[in-house]
Image (tube, rainbow, N blue to C red; front, side, top):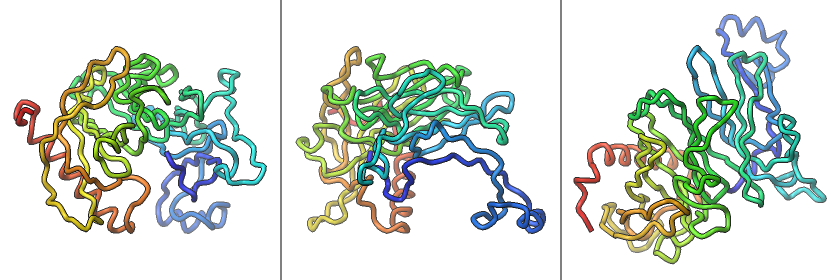
Length: 327
């Protein structure tokens, strides 16, 4: 997981309250933040234990409770490791009295004037940790309809996990590295570990998840550089069902190939302990575009991902495993 250069080494989370246009014009003189804000004002902050933060996800709980899940970068030195004589960034959790590798912060922001830090869920991979990406779905929105709340997150660069966060102060593992059964991947450095993770999307009403990453054996297996997408049915988070891999062709190739799917049975690689071997997958043509660090211009990126998302969602909804041709 590469940290963007423009992000500060430590981010203070700011909670902002929208205010009306008419009120805003009168409040600007009294608001110290007006030089950098419009129609908004700062009402509360939480330092997230001074952990470098990438992706925040806000989720509405029952009884109008709002919980924020903040995904953290891998623990690094000041200045993203580029500052001369930079020191290791803070990792101390005052709730446990221990130093913990970065993972996911859980904060109650129901009262935006007084956010309450509830829990830090570390990524204990023995190296630098990190869980930059986080998505949350209601069990009552998912097809399982079980009344729980689930979090899908990355585990460093090596795996993707699911946690039961019905009680945000006490997350319970569902498909995790510690439990030996992540959605995909394994502990950092172990057989079956992914070689990269990135932004995923979980469609709560269908349970379909588009999980971004790269397997350690993808290069040898013919994939181009960069991450691609693993499509899972997570309608029952405790029982993930792998559907297929998917990626775009590399548009920079001199040899252009049609944007069609072709059958290519393969194994997903080694499964973590206790996890059954995955079925054969359906793959796009061998050369695929990276979905990570070599993106085109912003406008082109938006067009690319809009087309990708539409295609993936339509493909999964209109097809079923039973309808796919068998290897």
